[in-house]
Amino acid sequence: MGTELQAPVRTYRVRTYGCQMNVHDSERLSGLLEAAGYSAAAEGDDADVVVLNTCAVRENADNRLYGNLGHLRPVKDARPGMQIAVGGCLAQKDRGEIVRRAPWVDVVFGTHNVGSLPALLERARHNDEAQVEIAEALEVFPSTLPAKRDSAYAGWVSISVGCNNTCTFCIVPALRGKEKDRRPGDILAEVQALVDQGVLEVTLLGQNVNSYGSDFGDRGAFADLLRATGRIEGLERVRFTSPHPAMFTDDVIAAMAETPAVCHQLHMPLQSGSDDVLKRMRRAYRQERYLGIIDRVRAAMPDAAITTDIIVGFPGETEADFQQTLDVVRAARFSSAFTFQYSKRPGTPAAEMEGQLPKEVVQERYLRLTALQDEISWDENRRLVGRKVELLVAAGEGSKDAARGRLSGRGRDGRLVHFTHAQGVRAGDVVETVVTEAAPHHLIADGPLLSHRRTRAGDASEAGTRPTTPGVSLGMPRVGVPAPLPVVTGC
Image (cartoon, rainbow, N blue to C red; front, side, top):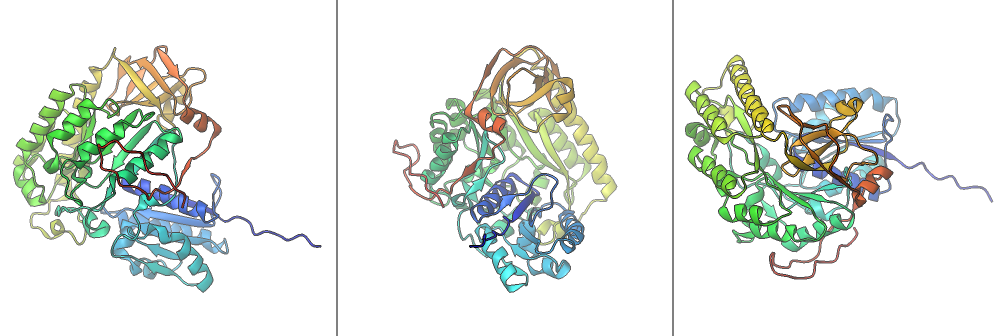
């Protein structure tokens, strides 16, 4: 009898652009491909399948995609059988245009049909032609799909997809659709599955995470979910992003303050400090409401670290408008801020507004804003020198400090801390140390560790394994009511 030769396992690589939702989707894409028999390409090797998970928020997103596709063309020409797939928000927007401009692309899929990728790749191979499939509505909630996670110690859990708002600068609602909330039991089951694998930290994800419950008419659902998630034994840290100021309620503040596992960290987009600009942005809050939320958060949690998003140079923004943004930044004293220069996005109302500002004006304001925020961040970080911090040791952060004998970790407030390396400390372990120095964007702890706790997540990180998580699709116990968690099932 002759020996039957087996076909080599096809390899894949997923490249991610954009927000945390895309990062989460990419973990699902990796899980789907592994379930279909693919394996991750080794670092430095070309892959048989390259998946670009795109973002459409920034002005140069299109150029970045087609530039990357141009770089991949000669690689594909030299590698018979290689496939290229494009998914995410830009794929949802551009659809067949991608194959027209880059005919060497094999598969285009949208934000609503992530689960179709393996079948589309197979169909493209069988038919020897590009497959473009863009669903207009969500087919399967992404978290019901298998995932291959990047981290052994931290996980993303999507509680909703889509957005019901109509911000004039944002194209996301048109690409991800109206808000669709997951059932509470499904969310808790996924969190429990992660904890069972050794995960210590979970971040709850949604375009407007605190509007969770609007899909089934429960305005208190998000606060209930925070409390219920925080009660899961073995889960040490709960975070969430991003809440919308217009829907931010005091019951969420209470849940954060009263649930030990929920971190005293809040990322709440401001976008602008000018009421006139906020009105043109269709942001349903004003400066007074925003600052009022911050005051109440700090009254309940004096140690809370608050971060934000700010857009500079929105159409019609005057110098007086911009000064109001600076005033809010001074009053809010954010620990850090993600600042953006406004860029037109085709299909958004803001792109057609009068008063588009010259680039040099936007750039000059942007530099003033970042200088102010850096000054505030540094000052706020200096206040922490001498304080004890608990760190979840991170992988891949602060590698520039490796030569100085430092590792990196995140405090419960989300701040990045570079600390003195100690024997046996792994990513996923938990250490305590004292802050000795501050910089605008990180802290330094150069003294000896006060404690070091080894964890199962640290064991997995040391072994170099990337955990896989099956999809979750059962159960709907009312959040806050004691009930057995649903069974976690495989795909």
